[in-house]
Each structure stands twice: as C-alpha cells, then as structure tokens.
Amino acid sequence: MNSAVAIFNFAKYFFIGFIAAAVWVVPLIDLLYKLKMIANHKKIKGINAIFYKINKERAKIGTPSLGGILIWLTVPVIWLLFFHTPFSRAMALIFFLIGLYGFVDEVFTQFFIKRTEKYRMISETFWYRMGKLTIMYALFLFVAYVAVHFLGVTHVRILGHNWPLTGVMFPVLALFLLASSYATELVDGVDGLSTGLFMLTFLGFVFLNFAFPNSFLIYKMHSLSSMIAVVMGVLAVYLYFNIPPARVFMGSPGAMPMGALFLLMALYTDTVEAWFFFMLLYFLDTATSFLQILSFKLRRKRLFPIAPIHHYFQHIGWPDAKVTMRAWLLQWILVMFGVLVGVWVRVYL
Image (cartoon, rainbow, N blue to C red; front, side, top):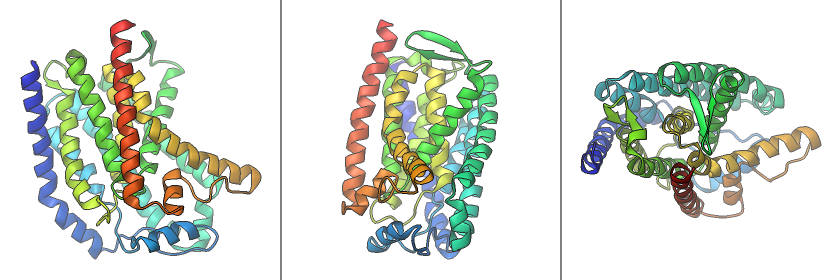
C-alpha cells in the first residue's frame, strides 16, 4: 500500500467515523439531559468538598456525564461494518466489553453509590477500590486472552528483544492493560482534556504507521491507521461538545477502552518503546491519585489538596482552557519524543 493510498484511506475513514457520530450526537446529549445523568451532584463535607467547589465555580453542576456512549457504541459498529477481518472483530469485541464495563461501573458508582454520604464514604475506602480493581483485572485477563489468541499479539518486543506472552507474562499483560485503561479513564476530568490527549496519542501511532507501513498491516488487507482514523473522527465530533464550557462529559464508557487500545496497538506493531512516552502523561496523572490514596491509607493525611493533579491545577485557579491546552502541549512533546524513540529503536536496534 503506497503512501498516497494510505493517506486517502485515513482521511476517508476519518470522515466515516465523523459522519456516523455526528448523526446521533445531539439526540444522545439531549437524552442524557432528559434523563438527568448528572454525576457528583451532591456536596459531601470532608470527602468531595474541593471537587464540588471547583465544579460549582465553573458552572459544571448540571452537566451530564456518559457522553462517551457516543464513542463506545459508534467505534466498534463502524469497525465491524467496514473491516471484515478476525482482527477487527476481536478489536471491536474488546472495545465494546471495556466500554460496557465502564458504562455499568459509572452508572452504579456515580448515580447510586456517590449520591449518599454513607455509600460515598464506603466507595472512598482502600478495600472498596481494591475490590473494583480485582473485578477489572478479571475483565482484562479475558482481554489479554483475546489479544493473544485472536489479535496475534504473541510477544512483547522491547529494545530488540522478544518476550513471549506466555506463563507469567500473560497476567502481566492483563495488569498493564488494566493500568493503561485506568489511566485514560482517570485523565478525563477537565473540559476537552482527555479527548485532545487521545487524538494526539493516536497521531503518534499514525506517524509510526507511515514510518513502518508493513508493521501496521492487518492480515495484508487493511492498515491499522484506517481503524485509528475511525476513532479520531468520532472523537472530533465529541470534542466539539466538550470544549470549555463542556455540554457533556465523556465518562468511563468512552475513556476506558482507549488505554487498552493504545497498548494493544503498540504490541501488535512492536512500538512499545514509543507507547511508553505516549502514555507517560496519563501515568503521571494516575500516579498522583495513587499516591494520594496511599498517603491517606498509611498517614491518614492527604498528600495533595485534591488529586489527580489536573484537578489540583483547577484548585489553584487555572482556568480549564489553561489546564487543557498546557496538557495538550506537553502531550504533543511527549508524542513527538516517543515517535523519535520508536523510529530509533526500529532502525538501530
């Protein structure tokens, strides 16, 4: 597949995803408002006071969540309709299942657990979080199974060395899939933030695709960049409604599948070194939340006034646009560095 055809197909599938999402985004958002799918709408003293204050000051109380339903349902449907390969079917299944978990978890957590102080306090405990992570890990063990047996992801190539995804490496793969998905879910907390970061991350993979086109072929029928283009087209529609001030928030159904998708693409194309830098900002944001929980568990004190760190920047007075655009800028730098590392590793190692 020459570069002109690859670019044409990328643009074509971008607009297929864009149009498919544009058809039903407004009715979806109207339905979310009608059903009052509002997350974290109650102030619970001592637990979410700072978060509630940030949202109240920025007029976010009353904005519905679960806008990621647009991404969760549109992407796998388009993949199934336009890419007729075992790979695309397996990817669609993975994307849908992770999004389904995110949907069920958010509906249960945001619209039941966190609406009463008693259950909210339970949900903030260390053991409740560990229980959720255990359920998530079971899901990602299945995702890892599908990846190894149906996607052809049979090894991890790091710095020129192959590590078969068998034995102890299989549960490790599931753990990294979980961590990656958790990180992309957690970064979804400021208007426009996660969507822009996702699109920049996908661009990194697109650049690597043009550098190593054979690595991105799917059974010599399609380029993986065409499937990426579908997701970017859907994200472009969503971003229009998520630019500050957001009309809708993404939530777990749209954010969680992204992390797994990033890692699976890196494994399939042997670009794990680049993936590390693509994900670095997500992992740093997640680390602040993890350290906050650990500090509260061990010291009974918060390490930060609020975590993850993107909320801390809101807390000290940064406007949403400043938080978002500076994160986009940092991600763009990390993506370009990741591309540099990815190309260097493939060419010289």
